Image 1: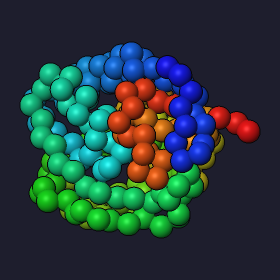
Image 2: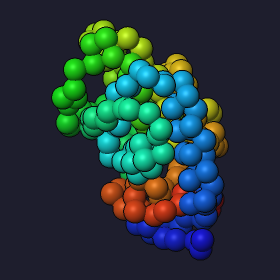
Image 3: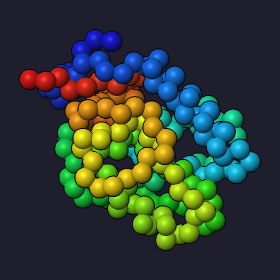
Image 4: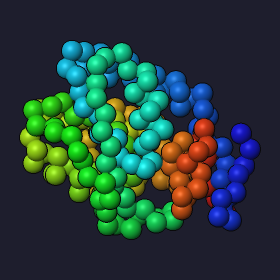
Length: 179
């Protein structure tokens, strides 16, 4: 992994493709154990979680369903503080075990805004699985049930995460280079 440049910002290698695959496999095994016989519904939050959702779903050893919703709060490298819903949930979650798949939890604003909407539909349970968590950035209380990596409060790109729509296709995760 070499340093890369996106929109005139430099990013250095941070989490390898192999490390991501290993953590996702471990997480899928734990979820498969916890939800054996329960047919959970995964709700992947687009756009960032698409790679994580795909890789996790392929590793599951249980029957499960998946749906997608688009929520956004980022512009550039900063959160706007406003959550926008672009594509709504089309699955019935009443009396279902729901697992939300998120690429990254930093301030917690997106989930803080979205979770009450889910609870209104009366699911049997709601759990959260995320690839990345920035504990130092958390402003809204969010309970993470399944976590791959806890990282510092620095901007990252790759493996589904973007910088103004670029970098999602990278197989590994890069961290912004300090000036």
